[in-house]
Length: 74
Image (cartoon, rainbow, N blue to C red; front, side, top):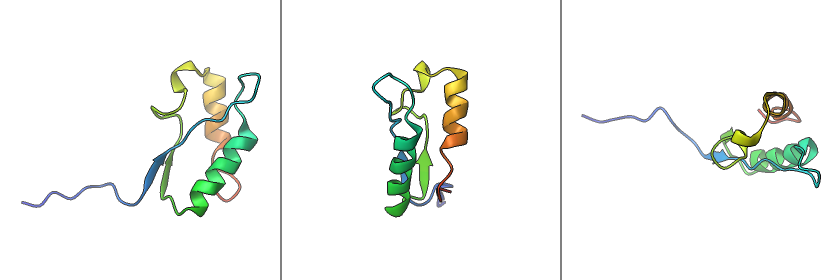
């Protein structure tokens, strides 16, 4: 029996850029996501184990979710 994965393409966990005050840097995130998209990454994972997810407030998490998929990033 052959097992087929439901996962395909190149997946990349993303960092979460922060500014000097420790706040989420949405401009930096936008630039980073654009670079990943230009590198033909198929799936970008926000707030995964490589990010600082556990230390974010609910408001910051929502800001990342709403701010991440923009500027041509799908």
